[in-house]
Length: 523
Image (cartoon, rainbow, N blue to C red):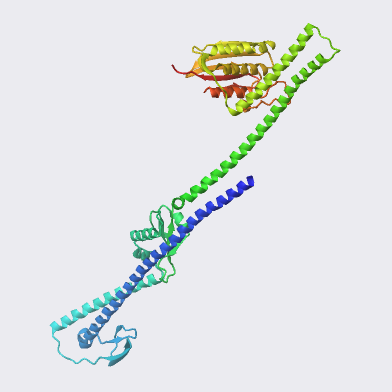
């Protein structure tokens, strides 16, 4: 049975772990699917930003070419005013450039969208002529403005080239900050997780391999957990870079979320787990109790057999002696034999009564004839019934009947019997002259009877068992006290039937005090 229980618990534990493993797989799978959508959207946005930079760069190149044309035209038309002798050359990549050497003619050719184009720039020696001062100053101002514009365009072109180079190669922290807005990223992540049925708190962070640190974080509370997380996704995967950035995810309420998703399976597993243990423990305890009860019943049968054998043998011997023709008895001798038979018959009746008592205790079907009576008078009757036995051991019974109200409702016969049992036990389990004291006093809701003795006492370990059926306090190999372990069990059963209770206070070698609490009905 133990091996079966261990096997079942192992299987149950395995499937419980599998339930949580399935929940973990669900979270990971859903998170991966959601983050693929987020990464794709961010990468598309990053690509759009790069495309816009390229477009801006091309626009700058066009403006720069137009400015160079205008500068070249002024230089060509007014070389003496501007003191510049140069032309404009169209490069193979499609851009213009100014040359500072004197050119007689410059041929060029190119193919645009499959169409061959060609042309030339001419620069001739300027003819000497008169140019008014007003026109000269105007030409110089226009030329200066064009040069300033060209310098500005060249600077802007260098900046755009530098930004585009960083975004396509290294993507440092400043690029990440420019491409990712925390609120927008948080909204995208939350929406994607909800779309994949992950309705739980999520912590995210953006990690840079360029500086080996977390650049952005949702709350800032789970830095270590984010670094140790296995949910890692590369940002902007389409960008070629030596230092990529990563999106990290962590679910702080992971176990709670799994439990809410699969609570019925977890609860069922726990219930079955507890039920299996309970059934096993209950079965083992029941078997153990049955074993102990069987042992006690076997001891009881042995005691009963031994006790019955003695009076039966005695009566048989008396009958044989009476039947023997060689034996002659006078009137006094016959009375002695008759007294012996009566005594042994009483012993047999007592044994049979105790056996019947066991049957009643097993069924719990005592017939109680409840009436109102004086508890003090019942105690006095019990003292009279057992007084001879106590006096036989040179002992005495002292009563302190101090209860102001001693009227109780119950079966007077059984009450007398249980008090007699307590006095009898106090007398039997005393190695010296027994001194038995009986006290009564009123308590809240009833009256208490205390039976105190100077006997051998009861150890703490045995005090909880003495009211069990057939239980006898172990005394080693000594069996000098006769009994079947029924007296105190009978006392406990009768008190329970009357709604009262019994308990004991005792120390080994210091005697015992048995307390009986009887409920009194309120008038």
